[in-house]
Image (cartoon, rainbow, N blue to C red; front, side, top):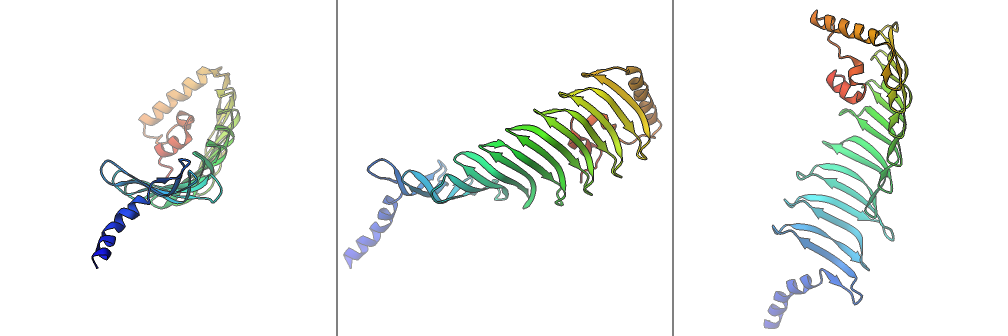
Length: 264
């Protein structure tokens, strides 16, 4: 009976001694745990021949789960779910080694708010942002970490709000912004990120209002621009114009949508 009691007391010691073990070659084997200075866990998982395998957990300083990691057998691929300090899911996707790979999804209140595609830790492919109700808000093409191809912003009803072609992170060619009824509000020409060529402005019935002309960023008819600006000031003073000038926020269409209270 006494021997059994002593064995019972030794069990926790034996169990603990089987954690955080290395083999004769110095490779980590079996279950490993590490604690934070505050006594809460930092991580808990398994190694085989020095490589993490199976299910892993990492923790925030407050002890809540920071990441659930599932390693694929025989691979450096690990499906990972990330959480904030309150326990809410923030993101999920695959790490290949220490780099993001493939599709990553980002969450707010358990709803997908954004998606990004990675190759060797660099954005490559399409990224998307969504309205809180799930509709597509913004879509961007990436190549080797740079905006390359199409960039689009959408109204909640699915119609385009802004469309542009990107090359090496710069606008090139014709960019279009739209009224919510689907008619073009502005045709804006770019060359290597600079305003270049004719910029056509329309009203919401499709009628051409005026044009501005640019040469590599320099305006060629400033008298027209100044006249329009003065008229806008007069209209605002008379309370006729409560709509934000689209050109003012053309550098950031999503900011324009926020300012104009279009995005909800």
